[in-house]
Length: 400
Image 1 (spheres, rainbow, N blue to C red):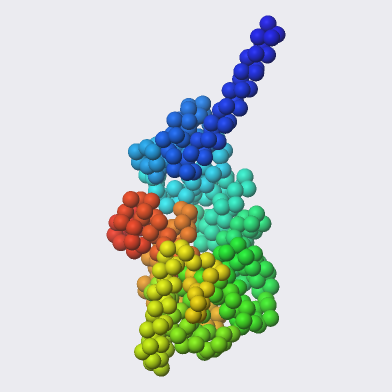
Image 2: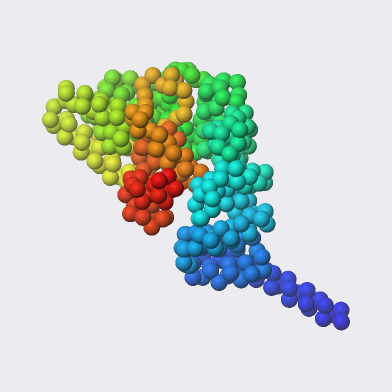
């Protein structure tokens, strides 16, 4: 009898090990896009109530990966996993409520409730989103102090977006005692991780001598790192620097190139400066600058350019956010679109941020980063992926 009991235990232990391996294999298959392999394993685990399996099945139903698109099934699976305490599922469910996607009734209150449950488990992305909602007063009473508290929790875990958010709060003195030195410290942490908006903001601090000794060379270095990711504001700032020869050798060709790149993303001031600098350039110089801009734009679009790469004749471009520092902190930049055109862009950026896309800073500027995020959203929703917020896209976002 004793041996029989031990045999049963050994069989169960072996079965558990096999199941654990199978779940890991299913997740690996999902990650590489092999949904046919992952699906039956997830379904088997879900039958036994496994939260992770429920979560992955929910994601598959939401995106139509290996199964038919089914919003109701997606929400049902995600909720089951969330109710079992799976932080990642709670985070996803929160995003659904924040946007009204997958057939749920849009509710910032419910979004906050689920973000908080995930955040209380230490889920950094949920902590950051909760801070974001406190910053704008969505679903909660607006509170910079609470925003700072949640940004700090996520920032301490190394989340670059939260580090940038915390740095911005220090720069503006919102929810904390204003401190440029602390702003620089947090911007640098995020910038070192490659977050372009933080790199740009750090450049602004060096340009203005806020929290650091004034240093035009360092300002240019950080502007360039952000510009090399396609960030229009940094590209514009570099254009200004090359135009007047501040921190770099004066170079009309380089100025024109950077203005051209920023203007192509809708940066109004870059467009105006582009026309101005062209007035004193020769036709061969303009042709050269346009050739460089086309080359860099193509390299950026095909993701062949990195933050360290530079073209042989001048320098290279970028794709990121505009800082939410107070406008007076930058002496060489300004808003890039008339205010009347900014409201819908702001809503789009806010929504994309909440549902997990990366539109850059929530600043109402339809730059390259925002258009790239829109394009990814369109692709995920099976819409024509052109990066423009047309009627079909706005309807899918519940903004029309």
